[in-house]
Length: 173
Image (cartoon, rainbow, N blue to C red):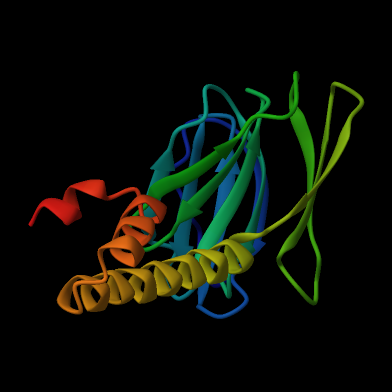
């Protein structure tokens, strides 16, 4: 026996090993997730947020985050470093007993619940960040065009750009 992890107040429902760190994560009927050191069994992190038992968990995002499902019908995304729940997904009407993450690409997640529903989730975070970056870049270019039009006293073009940017007050300067 290498180590014993003691700290949950009720039964342990699920245990997973980190894909990168020497830690184990557990979920319990006490409503918590815990991260434990494999070396000595010490509890490193405790996460609370489900309104009942935490039934399943999985490491995602290269072991930086945990997904959990619970008897409250929710799936939650946790950042391990801060122990903070960063997102909650509410698409089951009963306990979520099953959780699977695609082995080669953790952007695909599947949950199954006591409501007889299987939900397939596709993480769009990278796509949304790229879209946001492109929108910011386009806005910056429009703002630069507006500044150039004002400097050149091309007020017709400046007005079009100001309204396109939803910043008509910029024409008053």
